[in-house]
Image (cartoon, rainbow, N blue to C red; front, side, top):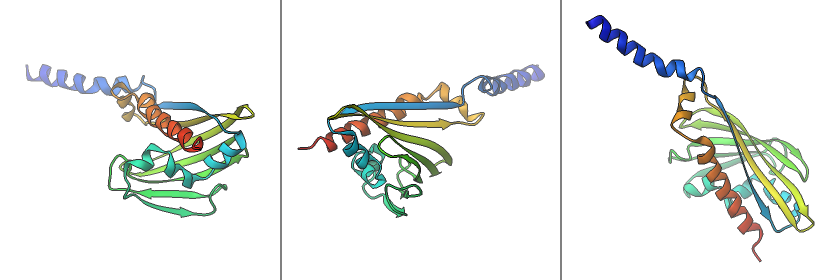
Length: 178
């Protein structure tokens, strides 16, 4: 009888690990907003990482967050770092890794605490017409096995997407101020 109970426990414990073999490990989130400003003006604003303090939800969570910078903002190699005691913010940095002037800026996000990860992110701008610009803000991520089991319980696309959209909506308000 004890052997059957132990075997049953082993099977119950093994099921999530087997299931994780068949669960996605990558996610990708992109959100958009249209801003009533020309593309050159919008791109010149979003390519400066320091400006994210004015619209990023994560920058607004902890007003006591310590920020440091290395390099020249709006250029490849510029690094914006943050440190917060708030676990929703944590410790990390982002670096500009590529700029396609007027069109796209690519970042590398390096999270150090409360978890470690390195993930790509981007912002793109596209002229809708001479006075309107579509901005996309995107983020991709990866959870290694067996942590990818979290995808069964947490909708990363909805969670991160809501934060990106809030940031984009704030960016729109910021840039459309009279």
